[in-house]
Structure formats: C-alpha cells, structure tokens
Length: 135
Image (cartoon, rainbow, N blue to C red; front, top):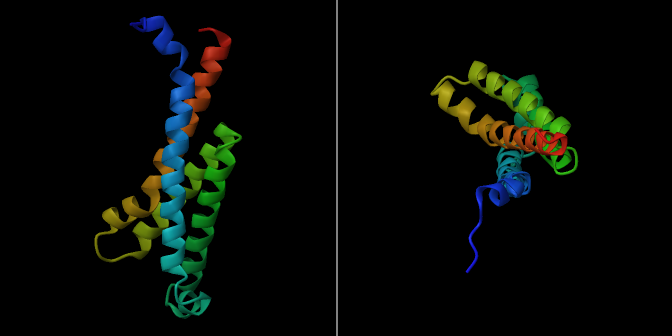
C-alpha cells in the first residue's frame, strides 16, 4: 500500500487544477448555451423589438464572447480566461443596469459561470508557470 508524500501531491497540482478547470468550463459552456437558447428562443425579432433592443444584442454578443473565451482557454489558459472574465464582468454590469427586479441576483446568475471558470483557468496558468520556474 503506497502513500503519497506531500511532495508527490504538489507535483500533480497544476494537472489536477487544469482538469477541474476544464470540467467546470464544460458545465459553464452548457450553461452559456442554455442562456443563448433562452435569449434567442423566439429569434432575433424578440430582441430587436424589446425596448432595450440594442442592449439585448450587446448581451448576446457578450455571452458569445464569454463562450468563445472559455473555448480558447482550453488551449491558451491566460488569454482565454481573461476574455471570459472580462466579457462576463461586462455582461454582469449590463444585466445589473437594465433589470428592475433583483438586479444583483440576475447579474450574478448570468456572469458567475464565466467569471469563476475564467478565474480557474488563470489560476491554472499561474500555477503551471510557477511550477515550470521551480519556485
């Protein structure tokens, strides 16, 4: 029966974090696709007829950019994570500014999957970089 020493456990840290980031990213991608389906279920006409028509188009655009950022983070962790986090922050601010009921909750619901996953990818990049430098 083998036991892992603390040094062996830290050797797998970046790989385990990368696996966790990718699993969470998969769930966030599914969530983003569900959000897109809900926003576009009646087609673009519903978004453009809305009093916040241009805002609806911007929201869909930011959601698409967040999804693309997560897809990019699978290959390029830092840029993809930053893109996902920035677009999610803008999406959250836009949702907060345009909703009347429970704006904090709605902003959190729309932006948190991409913010948290982008943060995980940035942490993964940072730990991998730190492990390569040996510090």
